[in-house]
Length: 172
Ligand SMILES: CC(C)(COP(=O)(O)OP(=O)(O)OC[C@H]1O[C@@H](n2cnc3c(N)ncnc32)[C@H](O)[C@@H]1OP(=O)(O)O)[C@@H](O)C(=O)NCCC(=O)NCCS
Image (cartoon, rainbow, N blue to C red; front, side, top):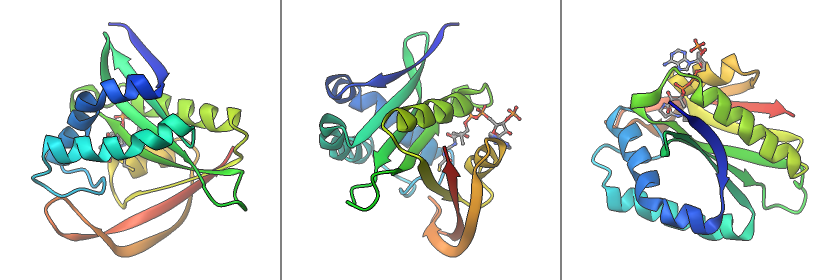
């Protein structure tokens, strides 16, 4: 099976919106806390990605995908901080690997690609957050991120329980 990691340009990203939406629906259906609640529709997930497209077009966001045999199985988004005093900083988001492709190294590879993209853009500091106790937290601990702290009751899980969020940063 052939896998590849690549940046999608705006046209490719727009064309991939239905598949990108499926990625979020899959993550939420499997209990991941990624800003959405259970029952998320494909249309709502597509609307989220639609909202990312102007940023991708303008270059303030970079979308990297992992493909397996030509099918997108992973995503990560690097968002440059918009503030004039933070030209060195970016946030990592939508770090998703399809439930059918987990624990095969795609998460680790996507994060490394996101770091490379950020470095190429001159960024030296990355940050992200994830539900405390999640697979994401384990991934970030395994890849050299530093915990900043835990905020109790920060967000609802898909099944609407308040849960803590762990905040991480990484100097690159
Ligand atoms: C988090 C996520 C992206 C990990 O992707 P993945 O492709 O399975 O991760 P990898 O195979 O690259 O794992 C790399 C390392 O991270 C850690 N890890 C990843 N998933 C883990 C899990 N479920 N439990 C414990 N450790 C885990 C391990 O140390 C793993 O190394 P190993 O497999 O050699 O033990 C994936 O589980 C996912 O999409 N989850 C739902 C969405 C989500 O929660 N995203 C994070 C939001 S911030």
